[in-house]
Length: 250
Image (cartoon, rainbow, N blue to C red; front, side, top):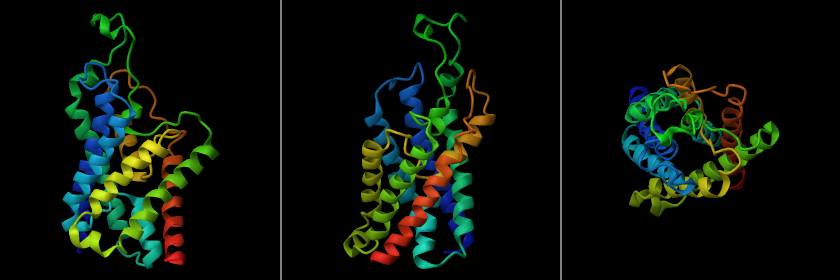
């Protein structure tokens, strides 16, 4: 794979991933959305389908890694680091692009995110909806050590199986590897996502957080930069540990 193919594939695939993921979070969170308050299960499946669509789309060009933690895990296992920077750059650009696209899809809903008493309908009397959680993760309990541990373990639970799937010859030949990974992401969201919102992907959290900081969203609130290191460091550590475990055990 050439550097150009890798970059384009990761940009497109990660953009699709974030479009679906931030999109489902917007659908569930924002007022005047037909899917408002439809719940965590919907969010988990929305992110899983985002992985499915993004990875299958990117696979012919880049292999569809879409996640710096996966890229680091593969590099730690194989010892091949020469193209890591291309993957990471494509993933960050794609994550930011996907966040902008999700914002545009829900532009009217974001613009209706106004304070109560401003002439909106009675349905808006509960005030503006916080928007950072649409783009990036926010812990339920702000405990940096616990949050970091959660992200490390959840990312190992993602990357280690992905590496092991490579040993399952039938999955690769049938083309179902991406489908299985998508279901894995749904499972992680349902089982391990409660404490932190399961970033498990540094680009998925950091890219949209950067976009959130400059988008003209009414009443958007803080972009949570005090927490931002956790969903970057945790998945990177988890991905590296998964690579080491896989290399040692398999």
